[in-house]
Length: 208
Picture 1 (cartoon, rainbow, N blue to C red):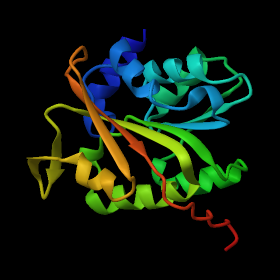
Picture 2: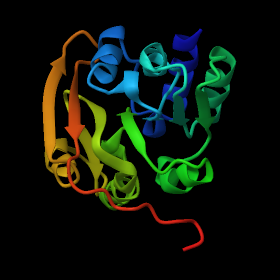
Picture 3: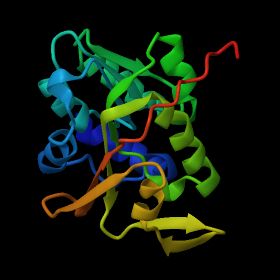
Picture 4: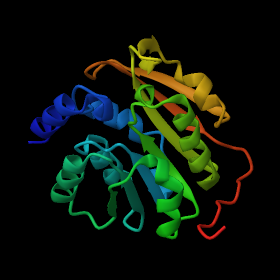
């Protein structure tokens, strides 16, 4: 069922979905393994789709943790809510650009793990930087972020397709960026594992 839902949405709105198929179990494993999920209190997922990576995250999270999932596609939101009954899961129907506001609304001032399936190549560069600037204040020295990118790594820029190199972007916000290739996925993908060790910046309050 999830494959059918994914295919329909990918055909209807590829710009938002930014994928041609759900992530494989190998990609889901590569995205979840580097994250400190066993000791995490708050984990975040960007762009859950039909939940391939969501399931891997929930399998590793402690019983007392929360997983906040951001998904902008309303059909995927409905699918996630009907598929997962786990009380640790909070599905947020909102753009990731609202991450700071949504976290503050839920009383979260620290995030331990982030798994991002965002198609960053389809997000304009100023909005990419805005996203990371809003996320980074919630990260601490032991936080880890994983981000995947299809191996062809294309982006839209000024109406044209160009190759997007994610490492320079990620290195602006993280001290350590490691890369591995997941061949057993359609299409093959890079997985970036990012660690931030810089001093934490206090998140802004909503009333400031």
